[in-house]
Image 1 (cartoon, rainbow, N blue to C red):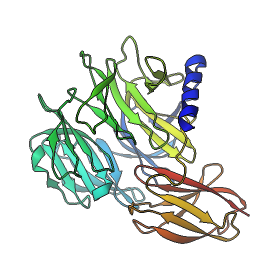
Image 2 (image 1 turned 180 degrees about the horizontal axis):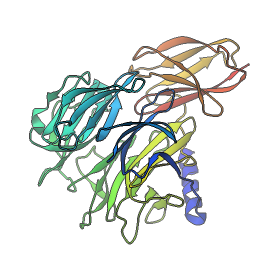
Image 3 (image 1 turned 90 degrees about the vertical axis):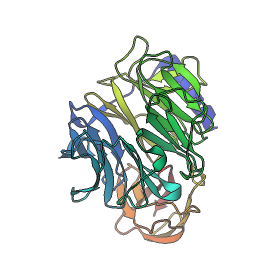
Length: 409
């Protein structure tokens, strides 16, 4: 039913169009290159740019840090890790306390390109100018010998044990592992230089071949990056983002627009060619450097990093997965509740769920529950001074978000 519903929306958009609203988020006039949703009660977001790093608490409030940050990941309840690099002595990985705004250098690393956290084996990865590093705690790092001397520029992964790393090189461009990073092999059918990748829940990965060559466009692989097929050819494609687990929409963005396409679009091969639904109306800048997506309740907020700042689209909608999806499930009883209720969380893979949010019907966080990492079981919750009404329990992992509606009498 969900696929039919989404297909109907796409046909409607193609026939009648849709007016999207775009709102500036954070400082204007900066070349925004990446974002990272911190996931705390303030809904803070890190914006990375050529001007430095910004911690944005709402569209008009931010803290500036003089770091050329490129990517960030969650470390613990209070801290994130980010990598910064501009070929200077300040290149490296840093720990940033999102409450005190204190920054601590963890290790100097030459021109790091990305930092990723791979949940199945609780391992952090950093790709940089001379190879690939890994860490079990985010604080102590070691080289992965297979990548020594390689420029590692990006990584994607699946919870099924698959990891894919893209390399800037003359010949080999993609390396994959099918055993949680224990062994690595070269892709047998790489299309060439891939600059950005996004994975989908069904195992498919999409990759951007940039520039103006005969191979430029959006490519995909159904075997975890080993062999590839073209989705569509286009020049100057720059970034790709999958909105899973919110209904698997593929979003693509261009920079230095060509004669055919620019800005940001939804790509769906099941709709009439070229399968693109553009979202550019009211978007102030159509040079797209990165796309991000944050799912809250049953709404998705789309963020576009452009040459003049970050803009978000509050009326971009993607349905949320229902409770009982592949990894975790939640239940609230009694529901309706009066003073107290019991929250049951089935977390068979012992994923990190912190923090668990309580939101009101307006989407505002009104409480949060701190639980042990990997928690699975029952926990009591007291409504305190919250008034009667409709509320939502929001449980997030790296790869999915679940919500459960409940009522306070």
